[in-house]
Image (tube, rainbow, N blue to C red):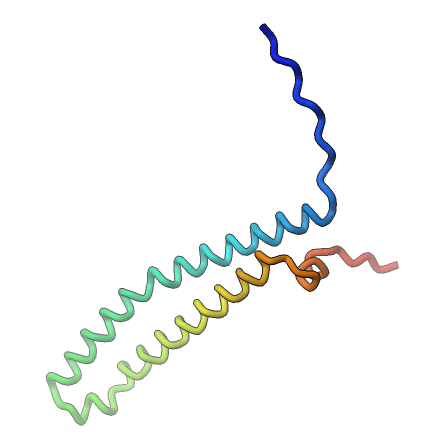
Length: 109
């Protein structure tokens, strides 16, 4: 037996479409956060290995080892990027009026 056709639904409003776009962008940012977080263990392991190598040779050379300082700086920057991306994802997920204006098209006449 044939089932009746589903009742037609009302088309999505502009605000609903903006909310969907905003939340999709938030999901993209969270995926980016996941990629950044997944890189941290490898960076930490490389840092520990370089610290052991530098310390094994000479502690004085460890204090001036630019590679170790560069790696620490890189990990710090990655942590800041993760925090900023999470804050941006939260902001886009909430879809406040500023986000709505961001996704609204401006028509210049």
